[in-house]
Image 1: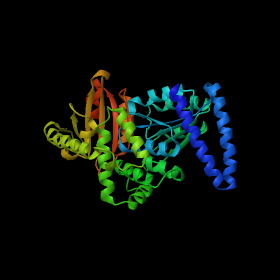
Image 2: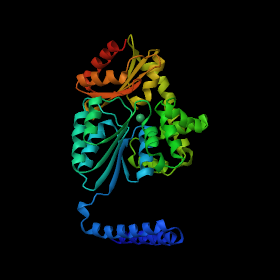
Image 3: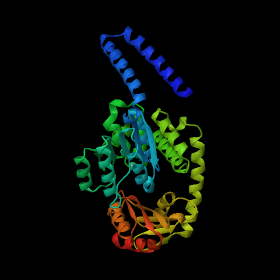
Image 4: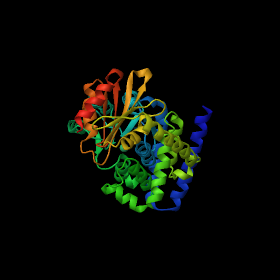
Length: 377
Ligand SMILES: [Mn+2]
């Protein structure tokens, strides 16, 4: 209770300062004063009928890479509110939670692609949110079933979707007027990490900054995100620091942490050389002591094939988490193929043309790899 009082005192003090400033300036701001008073009056009512008032802004975003974390940061800078950071398996659980939040006013969902397995439940959840008068914006760049876009627009979910620009660049582009100059740097780093700095908007943003400076910032950011996946508080801290216009090198210990990560990766090269196997069209490897996504680029590169697959068992879940990468020569859309294949085997998956992931039931992993090998020739 004491805390609440303190906060309201502080707020009151701020408002007084505002009033003084307003007096000093123009007539327009006199109108603001009145509005402010009205807001204050409203707030008193709010305390009484707290249950019925919606105030919360929430952004659910992807926690595993720079694009997801940066999207959450720019939404926070533009609209305030809190971020809920999730991976693909946790995405639906988080949505099911926010649907129950009676205070929720505005929801953003960023950088979280949908698959055949999740899209129907997603539309159901969005329908419930819209019935509760929650304003919902879905911003993403992963391949999407056009029927899902139609269904979302029908229930007045705002859909910002372009497969040609990363999510953060789209957030930046949509809400530029609410963001500061530094936000363009945050978006640039996200574009680099998603291999999308060569796209129309992404390349314009990169041109603002020195290329090498942007590359090292994006890379250090990525290593800090990947290396802190099990520390949700740290990921939240990154969102706050980026929203607060900090450069990655201004966040303490990020470069030191990145050094530890590159050492781990260099050990990975030796492991992949030893353990990798090849089929006609792909290289693949089971990963035991790190994430699959950290190894998959090495599996593709060192196998000499145009597609690499790395998979790691999630022992408690009876599944394999699978990462798939394609080289520039890979002409098929891996995200679409993996979505259909994983779904047909009782799992789920999807993503981009040259980078995607899947969840595959443990007994089906061999079938997944042999079938993928057949489908990508
Ligand atoms: Mn992305």
